Length: 284
Ligand code: PLP
Image (cartoon, rainbow, N blue to C red):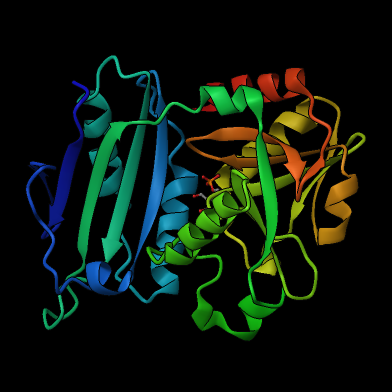
């Protein structure tokens, strides 16, 4: 089957529903305010990916928004059923979503899982992307100073991330690296940043208010197995231009090399990127 599969979670039970029919009320806080959290799970060749890191992050995001904590076993069961329903789909993208529920209905969250064949990113995995840096408008210590900004939680309010991507397109670029007002490189709107300097690989540290990327952790494991040193550090935005390599990494798109940053060419290593992506695909 290749059509999308939808499961709704109601009263602790999983119910399959028609993804082409309406299910969400307009008074749902998720629909009207983006008040909810989500996760993406990438499935390759029908293999169940490691779920612990995804479900840990879903729980952490829900906790950050004071939402009822998701039942991990129930979500894992729904993921298994979604995979089963998509026999012979080479790459499946599964979205898990949990909102604050319907206005006036107490503490009952709305929750669902949507699984559908993933977009094909094979071409940009090979070609790489051009990126612009955009100011996110916060200092790099904003997560601690203003926890209500929910930096580091995977919440549904991605309108600003989508706006940044449209700004990149207006500037003729494919993607974005956000920077803080105090000059620290952060992450992409839907990806983590990896920087190469010789045999050292670094990624921005989590205390700069970025999402803890599951792919970033897997990317570090690949580089460590290949003789590189890895570290999570504060990355100066102005240092990116002289990097020996930059990648934006995420679950479904995997690792995409940045070939141009703010109009300036960045070195790329096609062979290394291909090996990294093969390795990431094997982890799923
Ligand atoms: N940072 C942000 C803001 C994201 O939205 C995402 C993925 O959607 C990532 C990083 C990468 O996370 P992961 O590697 O777990 O997919």
